[in-house]
Length: 459
Image (cartoon, rainbow, N blue to C red; front, side, top):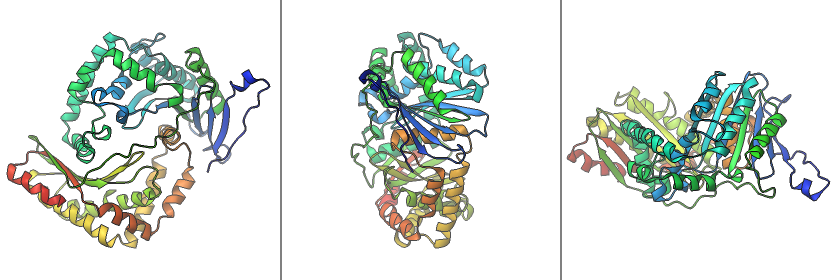
């Protein structure tokens, strides 16, 4: 687990304010898998994981801001800003940014979530200094020009339209609204056509200055890298941009949530001329810091996490009622969601929902068998390791861990926590989560008589 490393000692008070504090958070074997963290003056954190056996490196910067930090009129601002940071700085044009990474065969992208935003580049290890310079320049020197805001507005509106054209994706936004209502967690990350059209360059600039202070950022890098070199390059880039102004600044603490209210027994339906009906049946889950999340992960895997899961077997294999059916969990700072998704012919909606509800009720009351739990533990352990086999996944893990938990856990510790889950743990969390009254979201060409029957699925 976490162990403290050395802290440099300064001789004068002015030097003390410029000290960079370094810790070894996870001690690897022969340096492999070692996670180190340095906190720079100005509150900027740099976390790295060393993997000398690869020839690539992924560099990312995580911002402590997501769509749940937006007011109703700012809905979509975080995602809008993500786009704009690629549009140019005082040092590089939008073409310069993209061509710099393309010229070395790298890849660069970003994503916005409910509680954080991440910008990253994956390159050959020898090109890591270039990736650091480009991404740091984007984060510290974005111009956010009015012309760029107006041009990018069109691209974002097209992205919203693309999402609307994919009901299998859109239904998850609908389910968040069904559960959270008109709350930041219930609003779409992309915003709406109306809110995006209303956002101005000035409002986005203010949002940028408020949320992209170094104290709100975590720099993460993984691969064939040297921690000290990464720290020096990041520090040079931020200092050159004048971003590390306050030596006494303290990094922002992990988000503690706002006690978001959740609902039960709600049904929301969007009628749409699609070939399939897309449904999500679910209930409140667990916050990402809840110790029961390991047991919930095992439960989720056994219920709908693979081809041997209960839902897949009952809905698809035995009855052929759906091609895609699965369960999932989402954990936030103060709450979470557990959901079951299925896409099926409109005429089969009620049969699918009845089977899913029956399985959830059965597991809530009687739990899973020991064999199901053992198989799910093995599957979860294997997928955890296989999902961390590239430098991008490693960067995501350490960056998100620092931002959301303020701590790091080794892969061995993660595997141990999963293996330690007992059948009683799984049965207890199944009773607590699945025993709640569910809510339901549906998108599809359902007739009035079908719509009126949907309430039966959550009764």
